[in-house]
Length: 488
Image (cartoon, rainbow, N blue to C red; front, side):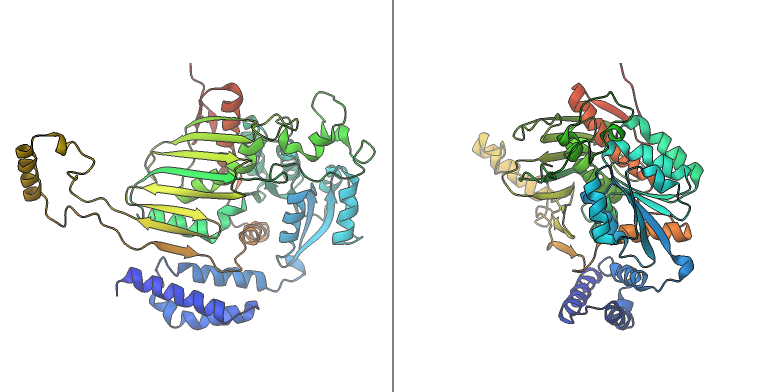
């Protein structure tokens, strides 16, 4: 049995035992992996099929670790909307993390925070109240996009570690200032595109780097939806008004305008407050592509789209496509990326990324991937959909004779092999892994998966896609120096 197939065989044995043993506790899972480590895993210590097992054990150990008083991390969440709640709930699964304060401009969410997290937490409509507390070690920023950069820089200057939801900034012009503030602060900062911490992304990266699909030429990615909630028409509260929403603070620094519930509770629909489908969804796709290809990003971006269905007052498209060119580097060949988001897709919520190479296609979906392998024959081919049969019969026979003399039967045969399939363990949680990286950084100063440089390089092309859409032009980007290239 070849090493490749032995590894796949052992990998599936591992998954089968993992599933059949129904190991609910971390200690039993850890014990099982340790038993495997002495036998089958030892045989495949360097294999691509099983390398994730040790990482999974480390993850389990990290989540099970007992923490002492000196390990405790006190956090606050600024912005208690959908992601604010999700991020907070996930952060609190990491041992030693304690929520002490939340900030939100809507009083109803402050009431809800006390219902969920206890009456002892501080609640405030002014995020500066959070930053002024000396006992807070880290903040989660999950506000509308226009506040990300401002709060992140204020928090870093106040000595707080920062976990900031994507996109890192609302405008490209804010990116380098945030990076500079982060570097000067020497604090941990991570951007919340948690997908980059998934095992599926990590193993896809390894597969492509190993040459599993040959030379990469194109990436096709989509993240579609078909529901009102998916199109950001979230449920409105019954008491939204200037009495319950600090509207003046929300639009601080902008031209004064009257309270508008949609612009507050459906902020993603408005370019003055959010970043549309590009900032919400393209950025997830680009983050994964950059991670898997080990790239700093593209150098040319073009996007088009329209408001095709959700005519609810929004001023950002609900259908958008992007064509993005990645230049050749020492780490990867030149390749093109095609992105799509469709909010009335006719196919429920769906998404995936295809990495198309010269010898195969890796399709990344959910918590795993499939590689379909196909390698072209050495011979160029003759007959079929070809000009051969348009020539005189005698010439056809002569051409076929010469062809068969030049190319053996083996040379003329396409080469393929069975599909390769990877699936992460059933209880793998990429969001939890992402937060674990963050809190390890807060405690130990270790690097995070998605620091501000990575985060900006992921979001800037997406914001450039918006610029391309609104200005109807190609945007040229310098992915190394992270700046717009102005052309004549």
